[in-house]
Each structure stands twice: as C-alpha cells, then as structure tokens.
Image (tube, rainbow, N blue to C red; front, side, top):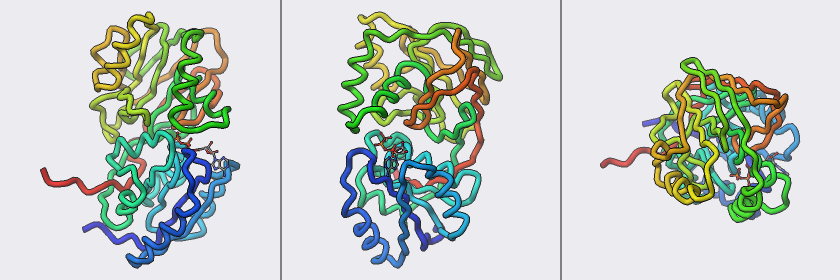
Length: 301
Ligand SMILES: Nc1ncnc2c1ncn2[C@@H]1O[C@H](COP(=O)(O)OP(=O)(O)OP(=O)(O)O)[C@@H](O)[C@H]1O
C-alpha cells in the first residue's frame, strides 16, 4: 500500500484549454474533504509562476502537488518538484495533455482525482533543453512555429492548432542541422526535429513509439523534408505508432546532444508546449529518474 496523501496542493491555471474552471475548486475541495484530505490551491498568473510556486513549496508542507491545467502547467509543477521526493499529480485540463496521456492518467476530472488516494509512483527522467526544463517533448522546426503562432493567438484548443498548421505548411522552409550526440553525428535538413523523452503529443501523434520515460536516454526524432504527395502516408504512420517505417524519418537515441542550426544564432524551440528563442547550438541532457509522478495502479491482466 502506498503512503496516504493527506495534504494536497492543486496548482490551477485559469486559462488552460479554454475549459471553464469556476466550479473546479469546490469540486476538488468536496472530493478531498469526503476522503479526509486537505486541498489547498495555488493559482498561476502567467508571471514568474515558477519562482512563486517554488517559494510557496519551501514555506508549506504537502504530500503531493497536482497540476490542474495543460502541458505548460504540468511542466511548471514538474520543474518545481523535480529532484525532490514530492510527487506530481496531474488533473488534465489543457488542450493537449500530452504527458498525462503517455502515463495513462484519466482525462476526466473525477477519474483523475482518484489519484489522490489510489495511485502508484513512477520515477521519470526529465530533460534540460538549452538549460530549460522539459518533462515531455520539445521540438525545433515546423511544430515549434505552430506552437508559437498558437501561443500568440487568442483562441486555444485543438481546432486552432490544426487551422494554424494548415495555413503555415505551404510556405514553411526547413532548416539544416548539425547534431552531435554521445553516439553519433548527423547532418541534414529537417522539417521537424523532436527532442523526446516521452512518446506521444497531446494530439495523439506518436512521435517516439516504444520508448520509455525512465530509461536514462532520450530520442531525437527527425522528419526530413517530404513532398506533398508523401504527407498523407507520413501522417498515417505518425498516428499508427509506425514512425520508423517512413522513408522520411530517423531516430537518434542518446544521453546528450548538441544541436546546431546552419546560419542561425538563435532558434525557435517548443519546450513542453511553450515557445522559446534559444541561442544555438542547443545542448540537451537527460536528468535520469528526477521526477516522481502519481499514476494509476496497473489493472491485473
Ligand atoms: N492566469 C493566467 N493568465 C494568463 N496566462 C496564464 C495564466 N496562468 C498561466 N498562464 C500561461 O498559460 C500557459 C500554460 O498553459 P497550459 O499549457 O497549462 O494550457 P494550454 O496551453 O491551454 O494547454 P496545452 O498545453 O495542453 O495545450 C503558460 O504560457 C502560462 O504562462
């Protein structure tokens, strides 16, 4: 039996996923009170949330911290608790909810709340990408551009993402990369380069099938520029866990990597759903077994 979690902090992002959260606090409070738990709340503001959350955690004692929001909120809480024994719980309330899907965490609030009293703990690797913390996926190239445009827009949710991707696709110019890992060197053009500790984007695209979140390694998942005629086949493979079967894909498995972009002093990088401009080369390192996460108890086969 795992230890009982009594004092719980819920980190709420009021804007994530275009989901109305008016009733959420009272739902969580009622749920916890009925089961003899105490729920406290921390509301993100979008301004210095990591520093504020870190100092809140230094001043209060909790048994677990739940992120109630999208991938950005999960990443914020994951960074605040990583390297400590304090476990992260996830109540998925974003548009993508990538890490929670990879971990088999239920996607509706009442089912995810069960993790407050019925759970097992998994200890995951995390990444540092150009010095930034990443719990799930980062990328350079086409998807990073779409995430940036999405972030600049007023509309959230999966529909907005698909609309922007369709608008940007025709004019997109792939860059050339020089990648040095602890095992190999790779050079060439890429439409998209995903830095993956995990498997699946929130959109259910399986960018890195059959990889583990706790194996001490990560993957660089490359998609080469492809003709328009190859797009449907490639998309099909991305939705059917067949990444390696395409003529336009390649994966490099490693523990650290240095990614240089030809002719660019800076590069746009998407890290856990947030866009950043980073100086090149971008160094990526794995932080083995640095994050404890509450996940559902596996059911007997
Ligand atoms: N109170 C707030 N007002 C405005 N922005 C906020 C606030 N709180 C957090 N943010 C911003 O929200 C973003 C994180 O959103 P989050 O990833 O949780 O939801 P999402 O983007 O809707 O979902 P997903 O990442 O799953 O698509 C960060 O950029 C953060 O700075």
